[in-house]
Length: 484
Image 1: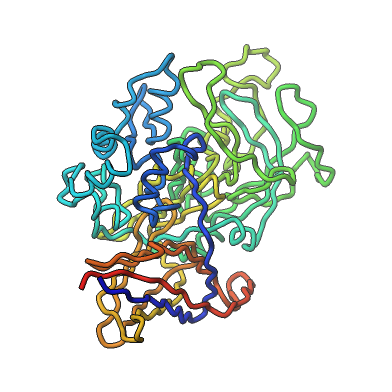
Image 2: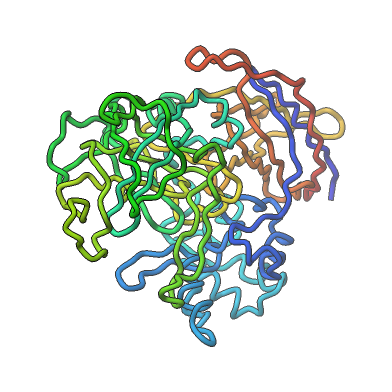
C-alpha cells in the first residue's frame, strides 16, 4: 500500500466557502439514536446528512386508505401506531430486508455491499457511493437530476420581504385573519432563475400533501369551483369583518379604509412569520379523533399562502349546524385556505427539463423541514459559481482520475467532476447551497471520506440589492491509501 495526500485547493471565483462539521442528523427525530443508523454511517460516513441519512434508506412508502405516505410516515402508520405493533418487515424495502436478513450489523452492511438488492443492475455499494438509494430500482447511478437549488433560512431572510394581512377562508375548519410576512413566490422564482418555458409550480410538504399553481391565470375570476391561484399575478384586496364568533382574530388592523377594505395588495407568499412570530415547525402527531393515523401539526418553517382570488367574507365551517343568519357555509365563496401548503419542503417548477429525473421529494422532506431549508428545482437556470481543485500526492505530483461526487441535502447526487491527468485539476459550476463532496478512486481509501461545504454568493446581487462578504478560501487536506 502507498500513502498519498489529497490537497483540494479550492480556487473559487465569486464564491465564499465555509467548511462545517456535520453532526449526525436523521430526518425523523425518533431515529437519531437508532443503532441501525449508526451502523450505516460508520460503514459509509460520507452519507451523513445526505438523502441516504434517512428512513427511506431501508423503509418504503405505501398507500393507506387511498392516501400515499412517504417511508417515515408509512412506517409509523403501519407499525408504530398499531397496538401493540404491526409487521415491521412489511415496511422494509429490498435493501432493508437484505440488511435485516444479514443480521443488522456493520458486518451485515459489508456482506450485502456486493449484492444488487433492488435489481437495477448496480451493486449496493456502487449505488451508495453515488448517493443513490440501494433499495429503489428507479434510483441508480448516472441519472441526470433536474437543476436544483437548496435555500437555507439565512438566504431566504435576505431576499426582499413582503407583509400582508388577509383572510384564510376554510371549508371544514375555522376561518381566521392573520398578517403573514415572507417572500413573494414570484420573487423567489426570479432568484432561483426561472426559465421562460415554466408553466406552473407544484408545492410539496413531507407529509404527502401537494398543490399545483399556474404561472398566470386570467382575471377577474368569478367561479369559486374553477378558481386558479396563479403565481405571478396580484390578488384583489380583501375586506375585514370583525366581531364574528366563528372567526379567529389575531389583532385588529387599525389602518382599514372605507368599507372595511384591507389596503394591502396581496400576492402568493412563501411565509415565515405569522403576526410577527416565526411559524411553528411542522411535525406529525397522533390524530386526536383517530389515534391510528398521523396528522401534521404546525405550519412552518415555511408556508405557501394563496390569498382569495374572489375576495369575500368569512363563513361557518361546512360541518357546522346552519344558523340562517347569512354567515352559514356557502359554496359560492372562495375557500382559499384549502390550497395553502404547510411545512413546505420543495417547489417544483414545471416542466422538468428533457432528460432529467424528478426528485423523490417525499423522502428526506423532514430533513429539510428540520433544518429550515427549501428545495426549488425543475425549469430553473440558477446562477452558478466556479469551483476548482487540485489533487496532488505527498510529493506534489498530480493524481488523475479521482472522481468528485457532489450531493445536496435530501436530493442525492447532483453532479460530479474528475481530475485531469496533466495537472490533477477538477472544476465544476454549482449554484449556492450546502454540498457533500465525496472523492473516490478504485483501490483508494480516503480520510475523511467526505467534506461538507457551503457555497454562498459573493458580491452584489443586482436583482435584490444583496451583498455577501468573501472569506479567503482555505485549503483542504485529505490522506488516501491506494493499492500499489
